[in-house]
Image (tube, rainbow, N blue to C red; front, top):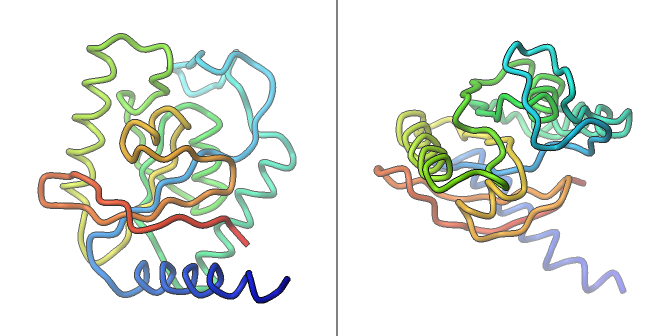
Length: 176
């Protein structure tokens, strides 16, 4: 049984090493578990009225996320959806994040909103790519749109960013 875990552990170690040492890396992750509210509601004031919020387990998971990155001496540049469950995941994990209104959940968005999201995400990735990896905390449909990968809470999709802000997926892993 343990022999089956060795390749995954080795692959995870390689992805963590790439985050630490290679330029132009982006890590996509879905916000931690949330409950309550309406998942597509966004309170533009930042007060989270009516929004889905992190559960206590989600809050603990966000803190663990930050600890995992800190233990590996990786200090990312963090970009997040402004919706509270993403924003709170980012701030509990890393203490800060760049937020942008166009990075909201796109599950029920019209074509114009989806296009605006894709352009904004690519623009931010291109602008902030470099020696420091980017962590992009978002929503399942948004991440799927950019990477063609389905993610759950605790999944990390690691990619490489081109000059144009396009992403090549390198691999995926779960938080330990």
